[in-house]
Image (cartoon, rainbow, N blue to C red; front, side, top):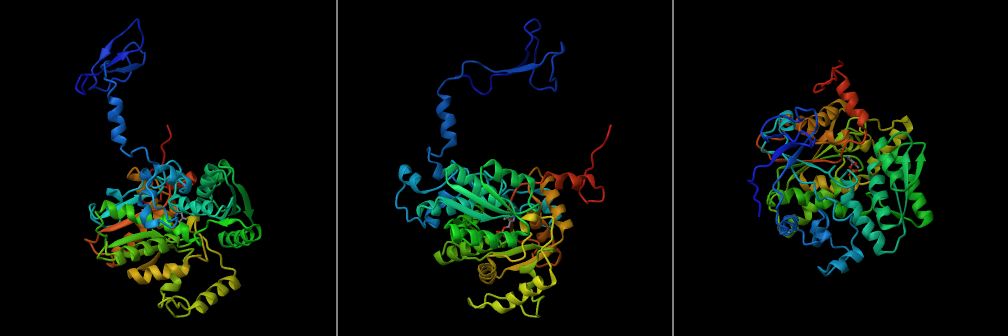
Length: 449
Ligand SMILES: *Cc1c(COP(=O)(O)O)cnc(C)c1O
């Protein structure tokens, strides 16, 4: 069998030339102007096919390959009591095992410098590496599993873009109907494009996300359709695996902090629940602290939990949070006509649906809620890019929030921090505009020649 060591070489594709070159130089085109081929030993043994297959090593089972379903015992609401592939495939919804498969923590040197944390202590997990390009696939695979379990043939959601992209993708793959309510003109073109591409019925609302959610919940009730927004507890179950993958990477030793951007607060709720459960099981002895980062222009959770409205801090309070404080807050915003405003449209949410569950998470983990500006989020987004990773502006809130808490010395120098980069860039205009603008801290404007 030809080994790896048998010298490959470069060879001109022009039969009348036939010149060959060594591999180790930067000659990329032949002297004669023709292109070059790379030539290997030809007598590879066919047994290599087995080797390739073994390297993939998932036993042909997409549920073992899936970054969600390989943790299926911990999210077993379907009460599956089998490892049999055929049986599993009758129940579990998966896009060929791809949800969560590639997302795990990475070190990013430039982000850690910016975040004022030692490179070994900061781990960032790009959930943009999901089939529809955001963390939403983690929870959508479980929510659609439940929809199928109870024979629903139409799913429905409101969305700032990524929920609809994910819902539409799974619906298309499972051959069920999908309706998505989106705030007109307020979602990234890449996200809207996916909803159309995957064949969802798009319904544009002349209002913001909070209005779209109200419409979609009403419509779901009228049509008997299945809601896949994060008010759905089965979404929350699937999203627990985001934490599992991070913990697995750390040999199940919890970090000191876990950081998420805060929108509708599904992730905050889900991560808190996952931590509570693992702690109850005795799998973890330490409770990591949650840091939730709001955008300044959509900072309901920040204001309420930090006592910036009505002088009272909103707290879980053993399951009896001050609901009247929340109502007064919303009433006042409505009366003054104050709408959430941020370029990070994924977290442009004024009335986070999971507020109460999120309070429970903050309470259990001794968590903190902070806020960052659009400018800080764009810097965070740009830096992730400068490490060769991709994320959208809402995810940029994560490095920005970590940096802020480091400066406040709340996150300590040798704390281990895991940050979740929630989705990939689907609004390329934001990256282009960032770099076109010389005054941005990390911009690299184009050069004309
Ligand atoms: C949905 C979304 C968020 C907000 O997450 P919540 O769980 O609603 O707080 C943040 N970033 C991206 C990229 C999203 O798609």
